[in-house]
Image (cartoon, rainbow, N blue to C red):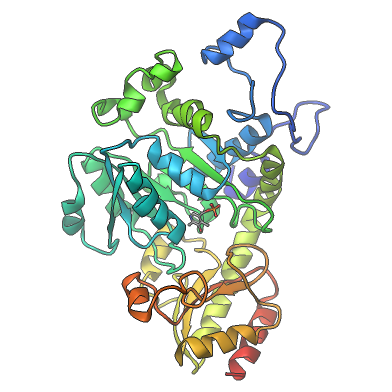
Length: 423
Ligand SMILES: *Cc1c(COP(=O)(O)O)cnc(C)c1O
């Protein structure tokens, strides 16, 4: 199936007489007739549902759809993108371990890795992702367990060089984990470029209407954990908290997701509600058509902004001449995403006047849904930072993040134009 068909037909496949649309299994628990069968479920010897914190049929159908879209072997939903990225790392790292992440990743993930996971004794080194391979190599240590990046970074919209990082990760016997939120599998399939695990904040384009916070993890099944048992004891040695099961022996290519479900979800419980999974599935059905529209609108807006005297700069990887244009063409030939970044001449004051003058384009701490919205990190998400601190964090004080929606491009441009005229 082409991705356009997969996002509609994968996952839930009703049989004769069953509901055509995915049902919401709004039930915490599932009934069994014999205690013997229930025992087998707990031993992971039989398959079946018993408690929604671990698995639910609605969630599983949506996870299976995203898994098929990414071309993976197993997937799971989480309550948020934050939970997905936390589980993805914590499933293979414990106290005393280290991993490497691009410094350009989403701010929430940056804090999770640099502050919260540090308190758990897991160390993250943030690297400049544009460094050459031999420079990046120096950051690997004997206790390095993973490499992490984002396909298109939020908010600086730079493009991740998959081949460079997968070569490095695999040379050092560790998996490459990629947050594919902004590109979605419609525009980029990281497994085809050497990534081993993919995560998503489904809150963004996958949902697409801004109705539900959620996340997802998909495993390609390609990383051979059993080859490095001393590096990944959680997967390759018996789990005392689960009847001494060794995940790689029992579940093969399903080891990583089974462990994340049976152990992390059991203990930490960041499950997505079946109701939200249902909304997510509706969003996924239209994802391919929406992504095309987001991209064509964003390109039109980028071209318009580029021509304006009052605009200092525009970053959009889909725009010819952009620093990341070639990487975007290579990894995302269909398009990148609807998010772009630009700066207005005259600093914070002019930027604020511009944003306050917009009519239907709204100021929101959100990206990637149907409605055009924008955010000025220096006045909003990063307002506590001084100009020099902003620059240190890689954020231009004049950067405006614009998430181009799926309205008429003509109307979006007209709104931006009238606001520019007022400054
Ligand atoms: C929003 C976002 C997240 C966090 O997701 P939530 O669903 O808000 O928890 C992670 N990564 C990226 C790239 C994001 O844009």
